[in-house]
Length: 566
Image 1 (cartoon, rainbow, N blue to C red):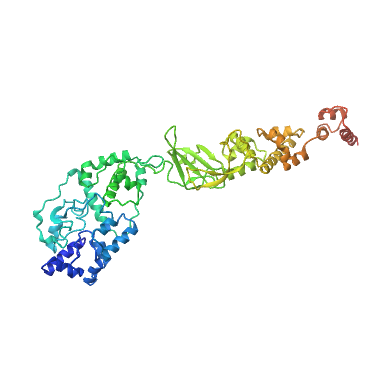
Image 2: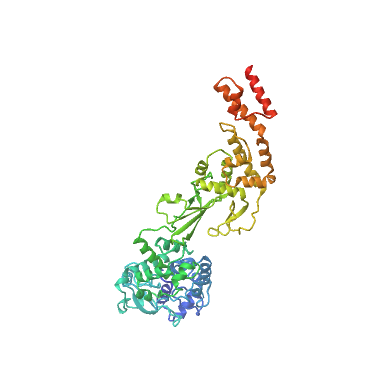
């Protein structure tokens, strides 16, 4: 058989060359039965035919190279491809293969008559003989993909329903007797594209469905998607109709109306829906033309990812490890809002779209800090760093440090679930139960509070003891030094439930005598350093004490004077 020749055409030429008197005799020669019908596009009983021609062609070769099956299978799922091919090989009831491939339900119909290209006809007649080409019989193809000339329409019917046992060879008709397809010159470029791409689909080396790029990605590049990923169908349909014109779409049986459910809706919304290949080509052509005429827009207003974790407390800070961005719409501005959640529990968002590379490193709002951030906060709260320095380390403002320290003092662990990101994504982080009614009591984990307050108390006492002059260590002075709002109230009311904190405070808290002794010792060191001697009245004045002294304090005072005299 010739290149791109229909199996129907090959059988028709065999009938002429064999000299059989009837078509049924030819059918019996090739298929072993007089009941096999002539089928133009998707014939069956291929296994019997291959056997009767002594396997000069395999079933795969006949189906792949001499039927329209590769074209219809191009966008089909693998299970339907396998079933349709099996029925073509073994035989099936009339229309079964067409039904599986969705051809019975589609409004895109096959041509009424077989077509041919006059230039192909004349060139082949000079060299050997003309034959029916597969590429000329495809739906929507009105021009020859090779010569770009309008096809001529023969009298031979495409459907063999009324001529079930008739095979007509192209060599038996005179090419000059048949008119060419009437084509509007405005349609030329689009029809040439359809012819070329349809021919290319027939030459596919595999019968598996091609993994095309997502239509939604292409639509997004041309700004046909909202921030939430919904298709702007009204705008898309209007532009689609303007691009092709309603007249051409009607000519191709691919009209698109203003109704809510068109073939265009099904093609984009339902990837598993069986849609005619011609309609796929029309959408691809439209999107390619739109791409060529406009600048590419990223599918996401925040880029294609990955995105950085902006948790300064994490060792992966600034690394692009976040794989998913959830996009919502700002109710005030209508702009897209991206939410990013890291495995460390840190969740942040910002309003888009990103207009520069640096924008991906901006935080609009922190929606969750996460366990890593809170552990770092607990750690630096045990140091004597200033509030501003702590804020710099954790990448927030000083007010956030104070507020989140309060959270630590009242926290309980709850699962963080961000429905915008994933219903399955959850991490344990520390949050305020702010949604609870004010009258509802907050359940306090006293063991955790004891641990946290112990760190704060240790830091406060160290700071008091490191002051240039002695200051009395008391509950009040610890509260003032800690710089945590509400601390004194918490410690006074709950001290009996904080055993470790209570024991530590009691081991350092000053009585009146111990505080006066510390002041005497400090004053003595100061006088010895400045004057080289200790005089009683000078010692009392510098220590800020008055007579009479308590017995324990008096003993220390006497010892200091005596040691100086020796």
